[in-house]
Length: 256
Length: 381
Image (cartoon, rainbow over the protein chains, first blue to last red):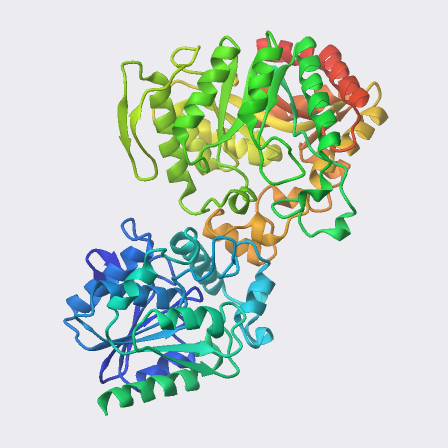
């Protein structure tokens, strides 16, 4: 798919109401059960952000601000309306930045442990510095069951390792400084007037629901927050059924 | 051939490496005693001045948040040396300009050193090692774009003499650039750039700057020099003279091979103590993707391979260390020289770790008296 000259690897799956899935630092795995489960609830469009997965780097897209406009343009190009935008972590940050810019084509927002704001003071490390921690420690912080998600590099193909390396590099490009947040985002979140659901892993050791999630939710009028047991920072990977069930229930509530 | 005496000004009195997981970025500075540190600073400046007396040139570098190098402000020690020395060329290799937020400040500092020293500055620009990323909060992606924009701004600042010019680039903004002082040398001090890979060497070759290789060994160095020469041929530029090529190694010259090896073993502290975990050796975006993939498979990128359990024999075999009696040292340097197509500058790390002052001076003395004249003769032919 090409959006205003920017080439994107996109997974499109399922039928029904439109859903835009925005992956986080973990990248988009087209074979992960989550995408298929989500596609049973609607028409899923899931791009790899420029530089991630197999999407080429783009000379013109190198900030989260650029990504927010890119995906607003994608929705406009496809003339979609009432889209449920779902994003995880970095992808949740992109989704929030889209919604503060324009809700013209957005029907609802589901933010899965989103990043993008700073809660504490200048000396409080809200978000662990993944670039200064041993990779094993990052895995331990981000997963409820780290052993299940430890990557055995020896067993991965060159293509899979290339994707992992590209995902890390692209994460550094978009999130290095300010680190995983936009200082201006909190004062703009009041503009998110579509129904918003926060989904958080109950065992998220990376950014907790009680501290980070609570502050984020308080900034969006009327937003709800649901916890998923047995999940860390990426609940769609550890408990995909539970995440999709929440998304389905959230849609049902809105229709009722 | 010009020989350059170089010291990292390390703080070597560290706890057992079992007690810490990284000598860089996160080793607490409570291990640093400023009173010992002051003595070390003065000792290292004395050693640079002794190098000058022996007819050697002087090289300084810069690193941050590490016990391996206590020069976080390279330009400061350059200022001291510019005042204290009289004839040696003064090389800073270099200013990590992809990491500097204000290139104009770099242009000012370097112009100051050049004027202080009455035109003896040799100005190096480096990308900075991967450990500098977290140490300075520098984003490791798109570094070379930043590097070359900073370079362009600095050179323009040095060479513009008719009042302010405007700079609104991708990475740097400065709307009234008009530095005082301007450099002593015309049009500006010689520029050196470190290259560890052929692709970066091509850029340096196109501009005709001095390319410096650090511990890249026989084949790594040859690949870099060949890329430099090849790029100039492609662009139909004149062939580069020997003085465009520099090679850095650990060097210790003794009266006997045994004495030379003993000195070199002490210099190896620099490699042995370089205990750094993967998040600092491979920050995302610093190395090309193919190297990052290779690192995930357990292959250390480039020069780091030699840092794993180094042995003196291995390091000498690969041309990272030149050591022994004067004949041996000359022979080893000549072998490298012949293999890579010649070079005009030998950058010698000749102090590190527990190598005492007297031992440092002895190694320097033996080199400058017994080896250096033969190297000068070699390149004069």
